[in-house]
Image 1 (cartoon, protein in one colour):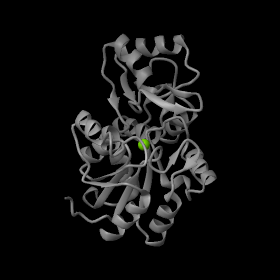
Image 2 (cartoon, protein in one colour; image 1 turned 180 degrees about the vertical axis):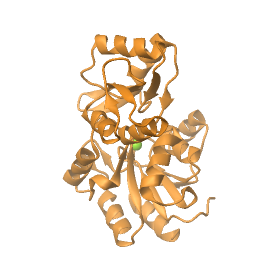
Image 3 (cartoon, protein in one colour; image 1 turned 135 degrees about the horizontal axis):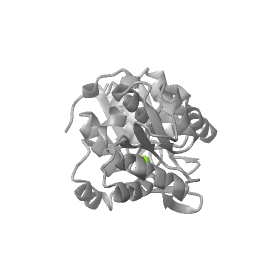
Length: 266
Ligand SMILES: [Mg+2]
């Protein structure tokens, strides 16, 4: 049992606070509780397609209080990571508006020619030509950065290929392994911890996915709390935990139970 204090929370979104466009029961009460008690939190998402404003607007539309400052995306963490390695670097981008915006906000230069970095996220308007160009640049020495490894993501038409599936093609063709930013990598968590302003030993990562949320929390040396509101259920817990080769410190069946747990760990 992990008895560290809960002074800050890094909270997953999909499957933790909502499904599709529907709020999970208690998500609004959780955020009101954290605000009333002045417990710092950030929403941490592997999504690289949307800007923090767009993510916050979607949460607000479901009834979950949110501002853009509450949101940490893999696109922002990617841009900060690249800027940390090489300020003002030139970047070839495979991605959507959220990634382009984050890269520009970090003072990096987007280019289609001879980049220092190839940064790749999900791009639902991807062309073979863009892929071929990215592969060529990676083979010629550009550093390959992958925003998040998700192979599939939910859509209104069911599961669709995610950034990780595009990445599988780039990896196969270039023969290079990317630097991974999103969960389960600790890089997105480290970025989010900086935004949160709470040390990792007093911060808990909350999410519904053992292989991504819990693994990332462990990698960042935070406390880890699994909620059974999404992917993981009491029935599949053992097999998912075994497959991910890790376990959360705590498990909550519902967001009401999470509120109770946070109040017990103040
Ligand atoms: Mg999730």
